[in-house]
Amino acid sequence: MPADAIVYARLQFALTAVAHWLFVALTLGLVTYVVIIQTMWTVTGNPRYERMTRFFGQLYLINYALGIATGIVMEFQFGLNWSGLTKVTGSVFGAPLAIETLVAFFLESTFLGIWIFGWNRLGKRLHLAMIWLTAVTAWMSVFWVLMANSFLQHPVGHASAANGRLVLADFAEFVGNPNFWHAIPHAAAAAITTGTFFVAGVSAWHLRRLPEGHEDRAAFLLLLRMAVYIAPVFVFITAFMGGNLLDVINVEQPIKGALADNDLALAARLQEEMVAKHGPGEYIPVHEFIYITRTVMIWSAITLQAVSVITALMTIKISLLLTRFAWLLRVFPWLIPVPFVAATAGWLFREVGRQPWAVYEILKTEDAISPGLTSGVLLTSLIVFTLVVGALAVTDWRLLAKFARRGPDAAQLGSQGQETDTDEEEELAITGGRL
Image (spheres, one colour):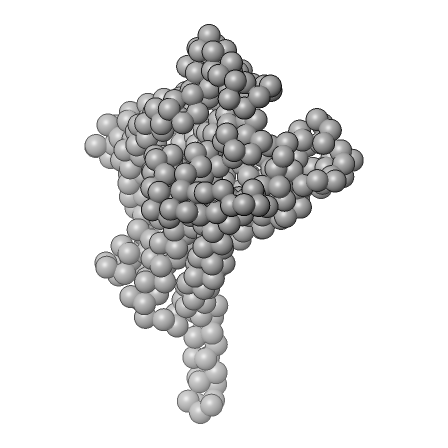
């Protein structure tokens, strides 16, 4: 396999995987807030919370729909470009991905569909249950995907069959993978952080523009206060669990840990040990790449934590946020991209850092690629996939910005049921009550 072909295949998967995770992170964060807001509406009956549910629910649906498309694009590659990976580890690696497919494409989409079309048709409590179940199955989906990914990072619970393939030998050990149990809270907290700063940014943008006394002003103010109190907690959890995960990496993937700590002498010694164990080869990932991505994560966390803590302290007396510290309302919309930057750096650090292994110390990346692929074929598919994923990302961002600016008055989620009810009332009036 030509070296440039391997690079093209890796770039293609990196592009689609990172792009899909950015959609997923916002989807998970937004659905969590939609659950909170709709629960408030169901409990209080306050129509302001209904408007907020429709508004943020519509933004969530836009991101969800386009995120599903990027996920499908990404999964095509397992069969197209990485048949060596599926051939060797499919019996182990494929099991959690199969469960995730059932959860995401059947359970989650079913509950979400009922929630979308259940406005004005289901009772409030049953309708609320649908979005709760949608959120639970969405989080379950991430659970299984990260479990599969953690096996690639730290393969446990498997045995080698006579044909050289891996089989699942110990499900408890597979599920109990320490890499997974440190990665899942880190990724979950990062997703909540992403949704939190999105909600805060959108709410702050509208607060600057809505006149005094507007019906949505109080709701946006409540959501902004909620976000700025939640943000410091989950930024801290993300950073704390990231530090714990790095401790696990130092044990499971010591070369990555050495590069992250900028300890090149230790990395060189570990390179010699890997050569003695696995034969000649380059076992050290790109040092600058690992160090830079880790640095980006750290400074992103510091920036978000500093702003959220300062804002939380300033909003103890809410009048100060709207008067003396009103300039903070201009800051939050600009912070929306920061969690995405941190998430991108995190995934690149996690995936590039285990190179040259597709499955750490079991299957090299060059052996995981489908045989027979040429550089021309992979370059063409890289260009096509880049255009497709790029178009989906641009479309998503433009639609989110468009509908976020329009505000709750333009939210169309759930409006069909209301229009139907109005049409029926008009028809009854015209016919004198006879249908």
